[in-house]
Image (cartoon, rainbow, N blue to C red; front, top):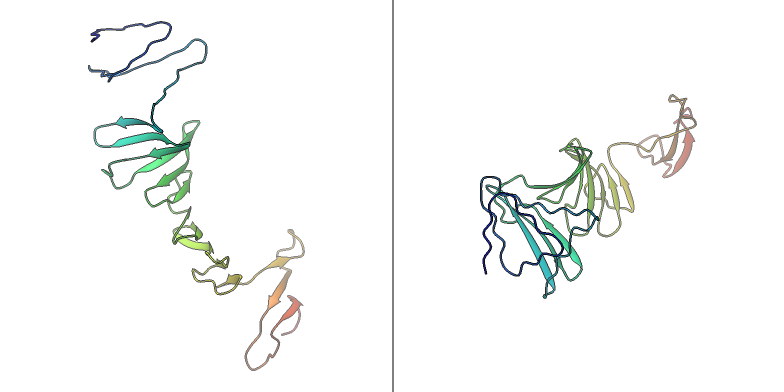
Length: 193
C-alpha cells in the first residue's frame, strides 16, 4: 500500500521499504539517525547496488559491483570541470579531475597523472618534471627517457654539508669537446677541468 505523511514522521525499530521511496516538498530531506551507532544495512539480491544523487544539473553515483566500490562524479557528463574531492576539516586536501589528475590542496597546476598507458608523471607549475615510463625508464626534465635514468636540462648535485651550499661535488661528469676525452669522471667542484 501507500503511506502519505506530512510534517515529521517518526518510525521506530526496523523499517523496511520494498518499493520506491519518494520524498517531495520544499526541503526534500530524508534523515536517518540511530542512538546505537547503526545506520542500517542496504542489501541487493543481485551482484551490484547503486545510489544516485542528483542536483540541478548533475548526477553522482555510488555503486558496488562484486566487491569493487565505484564513485562516479557527474555520472552523465553534464559539466566540464567535474572532480571527486577529499575534504578534511573543511579544507579540500585532494581531488581527482575528469582527466585522472590527482591534485593536492586546490593547487591546480601541481599534480600526479598518467599521460600514457602504464606511465606515471609528476607536474609542478603546469610543467611535467618527472616521468616513470612503461619500460621502467625514469625521465627528469624530459618526457622521453632513453636510459634507465635520464636527466635533461641540469646536473646532479651533491653537497658535503647542508650548511655549506657553496661546496658542490659532481657525482658524474660526461665530458666531450676539444679539451676532454674522459667519458666518465668523479671530481670535486674545485677540480680543474
